[in-house]
Length: 145
Image (cartoon, rainbow, N blue to C red; front, side, top):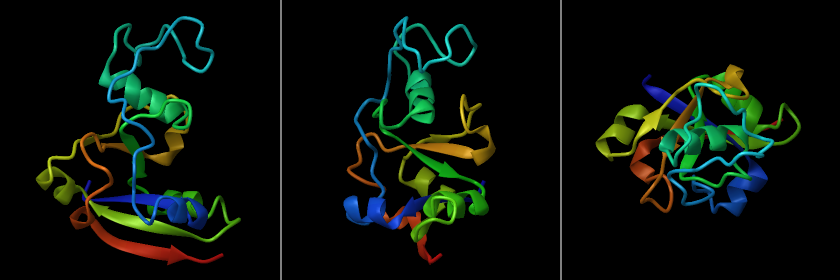
């Protein structure tokens, strides 16, 4: 994968100051019995605190599980759909260089998703960063509906 894309609606982009930021600082999570949003008893989640749980928690609901991970996609049409809330609002697509992420020491990976597997999600770990460093951003494209 050479390029990653992140679709963001204008309001969200403005609230984040035009920066790509993680919603929290949890790089690892523990899932507890009785958590109705977690698919228990499968091969995706561990029983101890893990990065894998944090990635899956982010995939399940990034507002509930505030982690250091940020969602990107390898599919530009998916990014456009996310940027515009399926054509309902204006937004932006950030084009990111995977090579630059590696050069900056920023980990990223794609894995089996528990929800929205059709979005070709790649999770970027912004642990230790206030926001995605500018050198990783190739372009910010305005999408008007």
